[in-house]
Amino acid sequence: MKPKSKILIIAGSDSSGGAGIQADIKTVTALGSYAMTSITAITIQNTTGVKSIVSIDPNEISNQIEFTSKDIKPDAIKIGMLHSSSVIKSVIRSLNIIKVKKIILDPVMVAKGGTKLIDDKAVQLLKNKLLKKVSLITPNIPEAEILTGIKIKTVEDMIYAASLLIRLGTKNVLIKGGHLDSKFVHDIFVNKKEIKIIKNRRITTKNTHGTGCTLSTAITTFFSCGKTLKKSCELATMYVHNSIGSNLKYGKGHGPINHLSSILIDKKFR
Image (cartoon, rainbow, N blue to C red; front, side, top):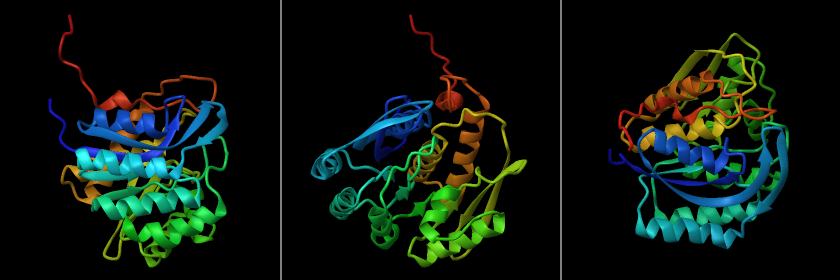
């Protein structure tokens, strides 16, 4: 099959392969599109946690975005880990140059093991400058709390937090509800016209590393192929739910999900 669209991923690398750029490339490929990358940082990690983070020079991040896009124009962009103000400024500058309209922002702030991946100054810049440029932002509950300054304990709190993010200038919000303690996971899609609650039964497993990266990239892929944002969120949530359900059990900590859950290989390779 030929790829259905072209996605540029701006995010950090995960040496364990479960999250970040590695998860993003797998997701785009598994859903039938073509992945390009601009790596913002190299993280040394495994399923038990992050050992260290190596920053990429902001100018080189911009060079990756602009030089790649000049040759192969992306249909959509997914933005993940942006760990400093200088990185955010360089990404904004490059976005102004390449002029791609469909942009999904996953505001990666805390790793699964609890390591903080962004500083306070960068959070403010993200809120004040980047939110206005994206089609959708996909924070989990801890990230939504950092961005809005409120505590989120209920679905109603999630909806209120989403409305605060809309006021900051973003057009659409998907707040992921996996951190709430409930039998079902409620992901809340909100814009100025509608509120959609996407409900899935919770799968009991510790192997959920990379779910946030995967979800935002899956949304970007479906959106790039012409689906509406709401439909893209529904389809991406289903894909992630099925990928978690595989329960791979790789590693000693929070293991990865199965990005191949959407693929059925019917060709014989000799």
